[in-house]
Every structure is written in C-alpha cells, then in structure tokens.
Length: 113
Image (tube, rainbow, N blue to C red; front, side):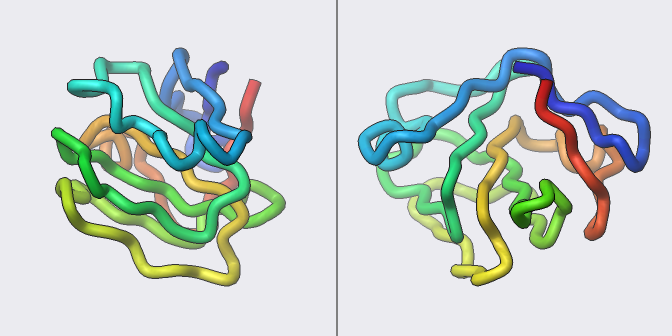
C-alpha cells in the first residue's frame, strides 16, 4: 500500500503493511530488525502504540477516522509507549525521520492507496 500526505503532496511510503487483526496489531513491527525507506505499518484500530520488545526507533503518526493527523511522535525508542488518545483511530509507523521528510503536520490528511 502507498501512503500520501494529501495536504503537502508528499509520499510517506510505498510498502506499507496493514495490521488489522488482534495478533498482527500486538506483534506490529516486533519481528523486524528495522524499516527500510518506503516501508511502514498501518495499525487499525489503534489509540496508542507500545514499543515493548522492539529493536529500533520509529516515527508514529496518529490518525482520526478521517485519516487526519492528530498526534505525532518522532524517534520513538524501544521500550517506550505513546500516550493514549481518544481522537486516534489508527497509527502509522514509519522509519525515523519520515515525519519530517514528508513534511507531516497536525491537521494534514493522509490517503492510503
């Protein structure tokens, strides 16, 4: 799947996987050793993200039901967790630096293709 920031006209990834089952959401990126450019994971539903057992840091974008950006976490390190947000309906996990590279800001709208 490809993810585009419609507001800024930037692409955030072109190899985004979807985690939409209980097991897949729980495991998330734990089995991976890192993310390459263009890779990521869209977790839905999600009101927050944990980094337990992770081996690398990530950027996390929290999205509401309209895929509008409501939360941003840059360089979230292993063994940390985000706050829980009642606004968030899903989370997009990306390589560190992708929030800035994609010029993502609160209020932006993303499209999943």
